[in-house]
Image (tube, rainbow, N blue to C red; front, side, top):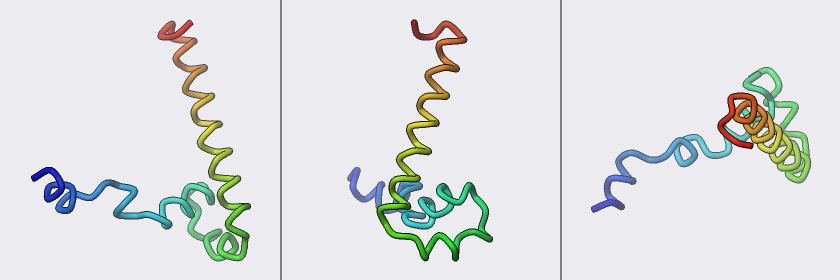
Length: 70
């Protein structure tokens, strides 16, 4: 039953897949998509990894400032 529900309501990642990755790497600037397609997969994935880790660090600092973590 759960698998059927997941098929009817796919996750954001499943619905947008590669497009979400390209959009994230280009900071939601569609005019940069074509230029990004000329990059190697390694470059794109390195940039994506950097952005994800940067977001995590910012969130950690935010939580620390709010006293949610020590």
